[in-house]
Length: 143
Image 1: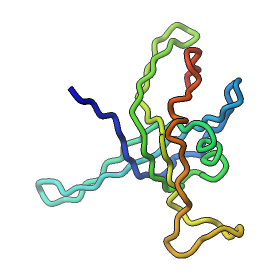
Image 2: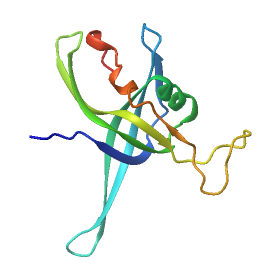
Image 3: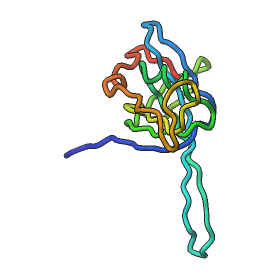
Image 4: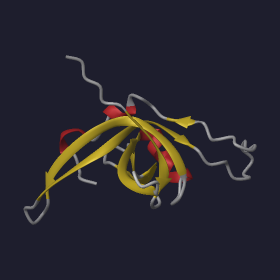
């Protein structure tokens, strides 16, 4: 049997990225994006649905996200789904399904800070495919 765990999402950040550094010094950015879907209902009425997705970005890509993205920023994320479970301090069990980014593409134009920024030009891909596998390890901290 062959398995595939690959996700591509295009959406907008719902809040500023949360950038932090784990004890080893590696950066990790937590993003929350909204992905919209539009369709026509059987009665012809246009409908819209929004899906909110958590994204984790490790290493230099995470740092770049924390430094360059803000609430509302459009991005493309390529990655894999991951589920995590933990227990809160008061003993409640929690779990989450999130995307671990392997590549993040900034879709907004660069600001007039000396970088490229022609009409429709986007910032280059930010990503280290191997960084997604270098998580914090066994002493995983819920975020």
